[in-house]
Length: 117
Length: 111
Image (tube, rainbow over the protein chains, first blue to last red):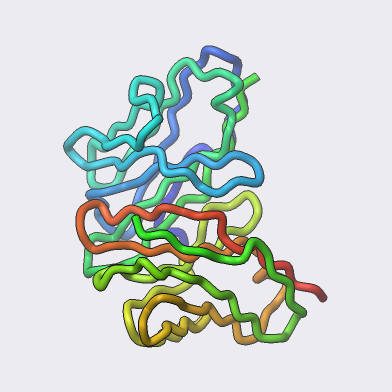
């Protein structure tokens, strides 16, 4: 079964709305989670690394004031797209790394399809 | 992050083996080789990973070259449900251990 749960799976909203996406690790405590964005027919682009109890680390070119990340517990990270506009429409995917052992795989959520009208 | 090179697309027939190649000539000694796949409109799914030795699991086998500069993901008997984009990614053991995705190989399975 799924070990990372992402919610909601789909959001359609008006331009200017802020949208929050949740990512939960179900079977393990994740000190580190990752947020990706994927446009149609493209690969996943890493947006940021979410660190429990501290500030997220953003990849170059990703606006931290636009994409707010909060990782308040060992099982939950949230991504808030603030004042979303049509160009923010995309498929957002989170993942979590099981900290036990070296080289262990990441587990991905099923993604959130965000459509801004 | 060390880079990988994969063919853009491959095609195979149902119930036949599929060999998906990946080149990673700049791999470092502590980089693990990870394979994930992504079906349409879903998040990526872990397939297999390895460091030096060949690996087998219920989904696939991973053959790693002796010099570790290339690897091959082997699907022993492809089904239509194996049609996906397959990503070969190197991941270090230091820091956040983030996964950086390349373009992957789009695998088409013919019935």
